[in-house]
Length: 143
Image 1 (cartoon, one colour):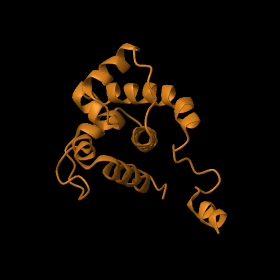
Image 2: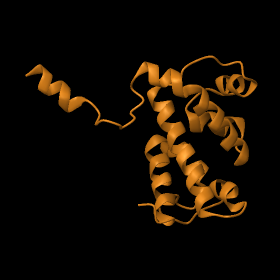
Image 3: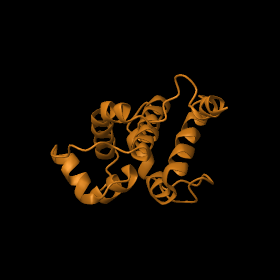
């Protein structure tokens, strides 16, 4: 009976949940580098970058300076994954600099309610980040 319960609670083969410590350690460096780069491309402030990744501003500053040696949490890696997927989707959707300007522009879509996607994602956390990524994937016909 216990093994049946464990089987149902495990993630399907191949689905990355970021629950495994070894996976988080292995993925953290690349995720931090990617989020730092996309935050820079989007013109995000230190406070915005920190809020998007779910870290303190002092941790964000250490990450930017290359002096942070921590491991991202499951939630932080989920945030990074959503942001990286959004960045990629924007660059597939827009062939010009709009891909990097779009996250900062006021947006009338209901998901953003006349705020910029960056503002909406900071306020709405992981659910809004995933929704924003899905929105862009849908616009480009990826859903």
